[in-house]
Image (cartoon, rainbow, N blue to C red; front, top):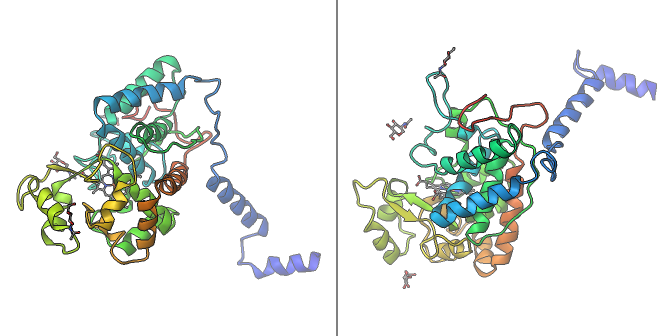
Length: 329
Ligand code: HEM
Ligand SMILES: *[C@@H]1O[C@H](CO)[C@@H](O)[C@H](O)[C@H]1NC(C)=O
Ligand SMILES: *[C@@H]1O[C@H](CO)[C@@H](O)[C@H](O)[C@H]1NC(C)=O
Ligand SMILES: *[C@@H]1O[C@H](CO)[C@@H](O)[C@H](O)[C@H]1NC(C)=O
């Protein structure tokens, strides 16, 4: 025992003890399992938190259905950039560069006012208690549910970042020009399987996209339904109209259902990246499954969202509880 331990010891690079390695492994495991998030985190400190968020989201979605989509995307763009830490909500100032002007975000992200309004209600009922990161995580779920999608359980206790990363926002969020392999890699970089990537892409069953992001597809790509392309071109000219909107799901853009996948089967994906999921590659079969079985899509989407919700949260004494989601305390 002692001899084999001694052998192990001397066979390691100098200066690194097995105790140090065990300690590092332990810290990594603790970090990966997000040990401090819990279902009842605000049970005594802010018992009305979930009702407050759900009521505000339902009201925002009933005023404008698209808001359910915008909140979902805002959360995705938060979590893929150094974890779900509300970094995406920080405004640029003279002294601070946030993520709002990153390519995937500039003139594109929406829903900040809804989060501000929820935050100010919660600062009245439970001052200094509920993080912006938790508000955004719950609001995204409630936005999906408000449009008829699945719901899922969320562990709470995320804290808010004091930093943001423009460069990570530019490099970690996948763009609409990507091919299937690049989409798979972008999600693999965040720990998701190709199957989870396809399920999460079903988020495009709600919401809108701007002409400049699908112009090349509708004018230059061959794997597109001709009458669909013609209809979309009517609102997205060859030049000009960059910000004109078209629904990502041409059949039911304010209903969270599986129509997005059926559209892919008939070559009516709006973005190049959408149609990549059904272009003869490894994900075709999964698109077929979701097209005929919305319950399977809902279950897979919800499970993948739980995984997204838990990407690298700040917990314990890390980060802070912002008073105003747009700036650090
Ligand atoms: C697979 C890689 C993805 C790519 C390439 C992508 C790309 C895009 C693009 C280009 C837009 C339109 C932005 C604009 O017009 O300014 C968009 C919108 C949207 N995306 Fe994605 N996205 C991806 C994955 C996801 C995921 C995982 C979700 C959520 C689970 C999501 C949810 C949304 C929603 C809901 C909208 C509409 C937002 C609104 O109407 O305000 N996307 N996406
Ligand atoms: C910038 O930083 C200085 C101190 O370094 C501070 O006084 C000032 O309020 C900051 N300005 C903004 C816009 O945050
Ligand atoms: C963001 O959009 C604004 C127009 O609203 C533009 O003036 C600015 O240059 C854009 N920023 C970046 C970094 O692209
Ligand atoms: C394209 O879509 C139209 C309208 O949904 C449909 O009638 C037509 O059959 C489709 N064309 C092809 C080639 O799939």
